[in-house]
Image (cartoon, rainbow, N blue to C red):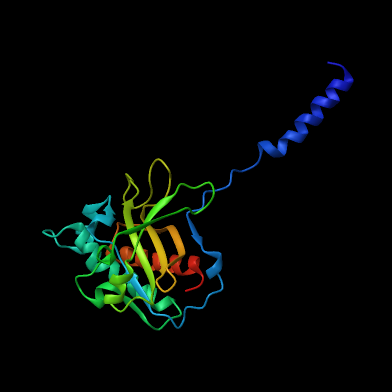
Length: 235
């Protein structure tokens, strides 16, 4: 290879280095409608709706029974009885509005499934796959006097604990501390204008040692509520 060709090869290689070191953009897991970034919802009524049993996925059901009791009850019922109220309590304490109600407080037998079955498809970014979200029927909201509210809809929540062979320390393969993970798919819906305010998936991960306990579930619910409020920004 002659001197001129060597110089050309070196320049081409050098020019290509930044491209080879480029880090791929991370997929967005949630998004805030730009039109709502500076909105003030402090004077609006909020309603928090949690999923029914079909929207609760539990990969570690023995932990649910061990920490919440109820051997003859389903793990999903324990989550609805203990985890969801803690989430709602934390959410209410963090948002700007003084008028916040959980849907089951409007009527004890109500859940997200009670609000209707209209479906919209939303993407969190140009590189993300579209996701179906169920939105409330306007007539159903009117019947419950919630038609002017801001609906915080937790459509799906999944719980899992990472596997570890030494219960008090870490996952032997990943060297990660033992943790409880909750992934929630959330849609915040402006019922007045029928517009999505915020949507996507958020994750709460609580690390623990010396065994998973009920307090860690409470911490998970609190952390998840805080993540939603901080990410949505306009609450």
